[in-house]
Amino acid sequence: MSAQHDFNSHRLVILGGGPGGYEAAMVGAQLGAQVTIVERAGMGGSAVLTDVVPSKTLIATADAMRRVIGAREFGIKVGDDSTAAVADLSVVNARLLGLARDQSSDIHVGLERVGVRVVIGEGKLLDAQSVQVTRADGSIETVEADAVLVSVGAHPRELPTAKPDGERIFNWTQVYNLKEIPEHLIVIGSGVTGAEFASAYNLLGTKVTLVSSRDRVLPGEDADAAEVLEEAFKRNGVNVVAQARAEAVERDGDVVRVTLADGQVIEGSHCLVAVGSIPNTAGIGLEEAGVKLTESGHIKVDGVSRTTATNVYAAGDCTGVFALASVAAMQGRIAMAHLLGDSVKPLKLTEVSSNIFTSPEIATVGVTERMVAEGKYQADIIKLDLATNARAKMMNIDQGFVKIISRRGSGTVIGGVVVAPRASELIFSIALAVHNKLHVDDVAETFTVYPSLSGSISEASRRLHVHL
Image 1 (cartoon, rainbow, N blue to C red):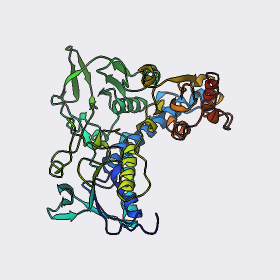
Image 2 (image 1 turned 90 degrees about the vertical axis):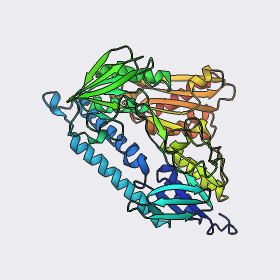
Image 3 (image 1 turned 120 degrees about the vertical axis):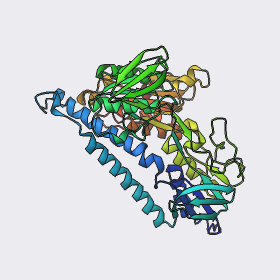
Image 4 (image 1 turned 60 degrees about the horizontal axis):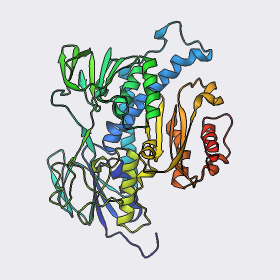
């Protein structure tokens, strides 16, 4: 930041302490603004306290179970029967909730260290330049602002005929109430959340039935990746009931009954309802501040996170752009940079990388094969199965692949998919190539370790060379 810039007079109020909010607060404070962040639950918001951190910790536990169970195939004796590995869910959930609290505390301390004022309470916009905060003790404070960032997140959507009770019927924020491994978990919803929980509880030893209203799991994702996951589900005993819409969920003592639209009834011990989310935009004064919403209740934003109200920005799940913590954080950082005059580039959705934490993981970045099929891009595509990779063989990986998408004619890497254990780590090299507009030869000619899974990324790029 050049010497003539002084933003000490800028009063910024951030509504919501999730990734979009706390990342923006960090940037704003570092650029010299006076930042107040208002959060009703705790720093990190639902992403840290009830969503991303606890769910991915649960999934990490399930992955540990997978490795223990698979140890015999490496010649390692771990026990004489199938009960050699048993998950203690009360300990698992206590650990993951403790990690979430610790992470929230670390964020809180980090914000205060850089000078951010943290206020715990319910926030509401009175207009575009003032926010009313109601604390738990009933006290009310009005905080004046030169600019406001709204990053209030979303909450689980509920079916009127499937109300969660937190004991046998859950939404994804309540599932950590479980003290024992469910005997039979019925998961309604085959999107990312449903698939992740189905995968995790299956590995932890639960009988799982996944109810999907579509013809396959993960209908919005790469078709080849979804096919691999469905095969993994089939191999591991997950029962996928496709093209079936859940009409109602009822509890009768220790039994949960899910009634489908065709009249079929599925009985289980527990049910997880994962049918999307609703933005937390109602009743917080957005209309009074001049902020326009979409029909779904999401806040309309442009590429630099501006809303329709002057000096009011928005970030995260409440914008409906991508329900990813990384996107929320980027939106928040972009908003602050734009507002405070720092260098800034608009959010590019074709550079977003994401990961689905199933077993195996599914990571994607950039342009998809569906976009190419729809004629939106002219591209060459190479898919290389990991079954040919030496490191994969050593690790007993017999499912998964690397897919590279390059622009036809120029050879620029514009997208990719990785299906593998730790795909979330492997996708970064492809994301770097997409962001920096690297040629497939740039990727192919970069040294990789032998043997390594990343070697398949280099090999796929080499095979694309012949198309140029």
